[in-house]
Image 1 (cartoon, rainbow, N blue to C red):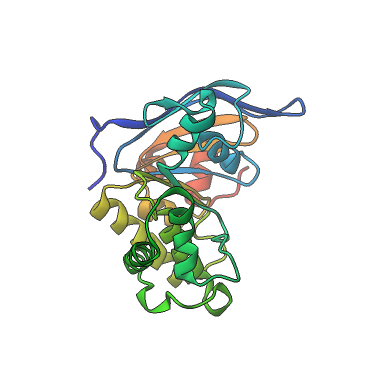
Image 2 (cartoon, rainbow, N blue to C red; image 1 turned 90 degrees about the vertical axis):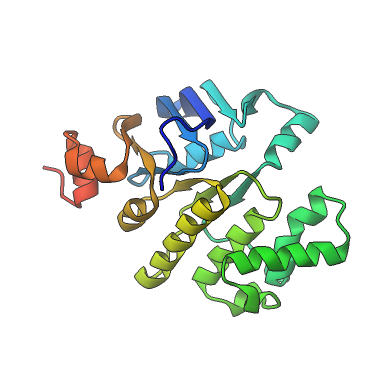
Length: 255
């Protein structure tokens, strides 16, 4: 079931603005992500979804505003403190971003090699457990070129989970997948969130996925340069009076 309205906020974004070379991508963006929920950042192309994600995980510095992740102001952290926080989040990029010359198991082991002192046998065991969680137990010794796009996305999620982070960020997980594979990935995300209590922040514009997995969402808009909606995506689809939000959720052409 969705995260409780009273659940602790593990991410707090306040009055965030992103600007590059004098161009405002978005501004005045504020929201919370609650522990254990699947939170979706949605909107049309060019609205700043991936830019917002990169701000939250510390790749970009805000032009204005603040970002708190797991009780820490990520934009203010440096050195060892910053690295310690980053080890508590996992990220799966759109393509899966797997190392082509390494097996799936070796890909999952990369964060363990970099950030733990586990011996090789223990790393291999953890990798197989994580691959098992995403349904890839039988593919551990395959190379990325030997698997499908959907399997690559699952392997990317397994690697993102290697250090047992409480928050996982997924960038366009359904992009490029056929409807059946996409539905399977949606089911996996929902299952992991419920079984493990992991918080997911998912960037996507795939309407079916949004409605299938999202507990709550925010919608960004390119023209508005900011947020235009927040809440349960199904309620936004059925009840929003904003014509842009309504058009997005109902796949309508704007007049």
